[in-house]
Image (cartoon, rainbow, N blue to C red; front, side):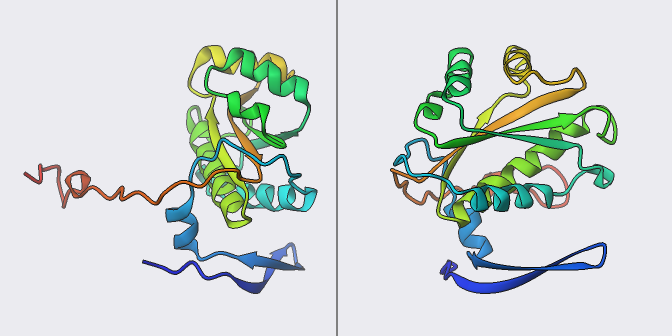
Length: 199
């Protein structure tokens, strides 16, 4: 198993010829993947604006169909908004403790074709979850899509344009719980060349 040792790195991101130096704490990629857990309890500490920007950068480096990048993100801390979501979503109670949350949306005008927007947003959501774990934050994916009632409710709460659809809410805070490392690898779900049972 990978150790997940942290180290300091300088990352150069080039955008139209501009190099930006970022000093950041890096977690081993396999530690981020295997160690991530859905965290629903938080200490009440503040998630910094710098950390939020890092999460959003991670989201925007997700793959998307034909590189259309159809996503939009709404960062919110307002307790009233949190309560409105809890009122319409039976599995969102953790927002009552969250310091901040991110709504991930897709723009139907920007997606490659019908149905690709949610797939792209799933990749962006996963990047946020992994980045949050790498920063030592707790996060959980609160599913909106494909439940029509939830999509309609959050569309109204956030006053989204008609062509922008909510995909997920990510609840964020400093973790107040730790979860064990499970063994999830299941050889029965691995097939070679064509579909065949492993029995």
